Image 1 (tube, rainbow, N blue to C red):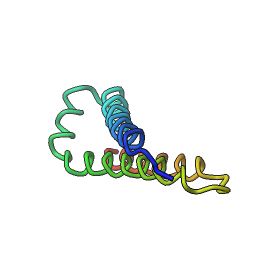
Image 2 (spheres, helix red, strand yellow; image 1 turned 30 degrees about the vertical axis):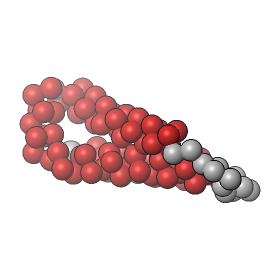
Image 3 (cartoon, rainbow, N blue to C red; image 1 turned 90 degrees about the horizontal axis):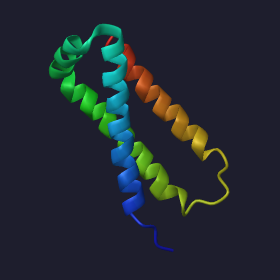
Image 4 (cartoon, one colour; image 1 turned 90 degrees about the vertical axis):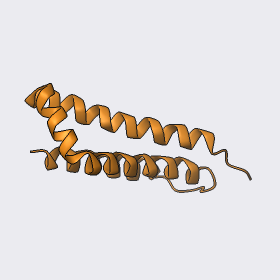
Length: 94
């Protein structure tokens, strides 16, 4: 059984970009665009590492989901880890 790497890779990139979009959107709404850029320039390595890690989680989840049968709560694990990553990133900016 062969699993294609293209779909998980695209999903990982999309998830990382979505998390970055959420970061920029939430911080801009709360504090304005100049503050958002200043914070990103200061903490870019943390923010991008967190987004990349979330992207890896999503990619691995989709890649490993196909061969694993019988696990019913896969979506719950992904939602929980994604919510935790997002909350951590937003809390770090507070």
